[in-house]
Image: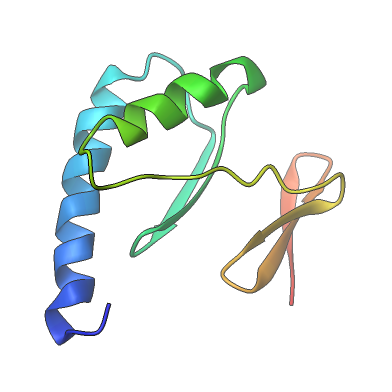
Length: 92
Protein backbone atom coordinates (compact mmCIF):
# COMPACT_ATOMS: atom_id res chain seq x y z
CA UNK A 1 0.00 0.00 0.00
CA UNK A 2 2.96 2.32 -0.58
CA UNK A 3 1.88 3.84 -3.88
CA UNK A 4 -0.82 6.53 -4.09
CA UNK A 5 -2.62 4.27 -6.59
CA UNK A 6 -2.66 1.27 -4.22
CA UNK A 7 -5.76 2.44 -2.38
CA UNK A 8 -7.66 3.08 -5.61
CA UNK A 9 -6.63 -0.23 -7.18
CA UNK A 10 -7.47 -2.17 -4.01
CA UNK A 11 -10.89 -0.52 -3.94
CA UNK A 12 -11.58 -1.40 -7.60
CA UNK A 13 -10.49 -5.02 -7.16
CA UNK A 14 -12.51 -5.52 -3.99
CA UNK A 15 -15.58 -3.92 -5.61
CA UNK A 16 -15.35 -6.46 -8.44
CA UNK A 17 -14.81 -9.25 -5.91
CA UNK A 18 -17.90 -8.14 -3.95
CA UNK A 19 -20.01 -8.03 -7.09
CA UNK A 20 -18.97 -11.57 -8.06
CA UNK A 21 -19.19 -13.07 -4.58
CA UNK A 22 -22.53 -11.57 -3.55
CA UNK A 23 -24.12 -12.87 -6.75
CA UNK A 24 -23.15 -16.42 -5.71
CA UNK A 25 -23.94 -16.29 -1.97
CA UNK A 26 -27.47 -17.56 -1.44
CA UNK A 27 -27.97 -16.21 2.07
CA UNK A 28 -28.73 -12.76 3.41
CA UNK A 29 -25.72 -10.97 4.94
CA UNK A 30 -27.29 -8.74 7.61
CA UNK A 31 -24.17 -6.65 8.25
CA UNK A 32 -21.33 -5.89 5.82
CA UNK A 33 -18.83 -3.06 5.93
CA UNK A 34 -15.55 -2.58 4.08
CA UNK A 35 -12.77 -0.05 4.32
CA UNK A 36 -10.34 -0.54 1.40
CA UNK A 37 -9.38 -4.21 1.94
CA UNK A 38 -10.59 -4.72 5.52
CA UNK A 39 -14.03 -6.31 5.75
CA UNK A 40 -16.34 -7.02 8.65
CA UNK A 41 -19.54 -8.98 8.12
CA UNK A 42 -22.12 -10.99 9.98
CA UNK A 43 -23.29 -14.29 8.53
CA UNK A 44 -24.87 -17.53 9.69
CA UNK A 45 -22.26 -19.64 11.49
CA UNK A 46 -22.74 -22.66 9.22
CA UNK A 47 -21.96 -20.58 6.10
CA UNK A 48 -18.84 -18.74 7.25
CA UNK A 49 -16.44 -21.31 5.78
CA UNK A 50 -18.29 -21.27 2.45
CA UNK A 51 -18.20 -17.46 2.33
CA UNK A 52 -14.47 -17.43 3.13
CA UNK A 53 -13.84 -20.04 0.41
CA UNK A 54 -15.79 -17.90 -2.06
CA UNK A 55 -13.73 -14.82 -1.22
CA UNK A 56 -10.46 -16.77 -1.41
CA UNK A 57 -11.34 -18.38 -4.75
CA UNK A 58 -11.61 -15.00 -6.48
CA UNK A 59 -7.88 -14.77 -7.23
CA UNK A 60 -4.92 -16.94 -6.25
CA UNK A 61 -2.92 -13.98 -4.88
CA UNK A 62 -5.71 -12.53 -2.74
CA UNK A 63 -6.30 -14.40 0.50
CA UNK A 64 -8.67 -13.47 3.30
CA UNK A 65 -8.58 -14.59 6.91
CA UNK A 66 -11.24 -14.76 9.60
CA UNK A 67 -11.28 -13.26 13.06
CA UNK A 68 -14.30 -14.50 14.99
CA UNK A 69 -13.82 -11.99 17.78
CA UNK A 70 -14.79 -12.98 21.30
CA UNK A 71 -17.94 -13.12 23.41
CA UNK A 72 -17.82 -9.33 23.82
CA UNK A 73 -17.37 -8.27 20.18
CA UNK A 74 -14.86 -7.96 17.38
CA UNK A 75 -12.11 -5.47 16.57
CA UNK A 76 -12.31 -3.67 13.25
CA UNK A 77 -10.00 -0.81 12.33
CA UNK A 78 -9.02 -0.08 15.94
CA UNK A 79 -12.67 0.05 17.01
CA UNK A 80 -14.41 -2.62 19.06
CA UNK A 81 -17.83 -3.54 17.64
CA UNK A 82 -20.08 -4.79 20.44
CA UNK A 83 -23.34 -6.70 20.02
CA UNK A 84 -26.04 -5.25 22.28
CA UNK A 85 -29.19 -7.33 21.74
CA UNK A 86 -29.18 -6.93 17.96
CA UNK A 87 -27.75 -3.44 17.77
CA UNK A 88 -24.09 -2.51 17.33
CA UNK A 89 -22.22 -0.35 19.80
CA UNK A 90 -18.85 1.16 18.89
CA UNK A 91 -16.14 1.30 21.56
CA UNK A 92 -12.77 2.97 21.04
